[in-house]
Length: 77
Image (cartoon, rainbow, N blue to C red; front, side, top):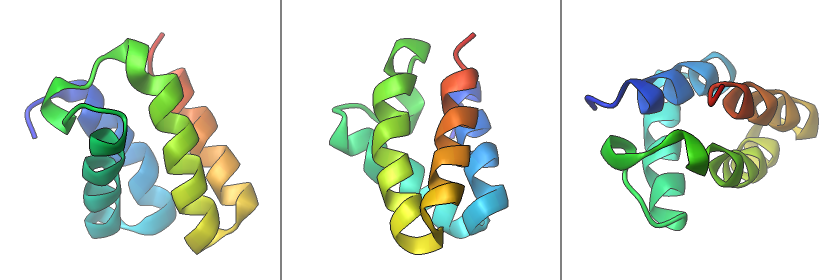
């Protein structure tokens, strides 16, 4: 993954779910919003954060999901 933005999303996520799951989660959730990790842009972060929050909340709890989503939203600025 060459896109620095997607790499930062993955890093924010990996602290909560581990590197392997983070990579798969970023890929899948990018597909859901109609993009790929390589084509992800800052304007898509809010929508991506919503979907990733749901995924992380399901596996790691609501509080962790919210925390990760906030980190992802903060990467755009």
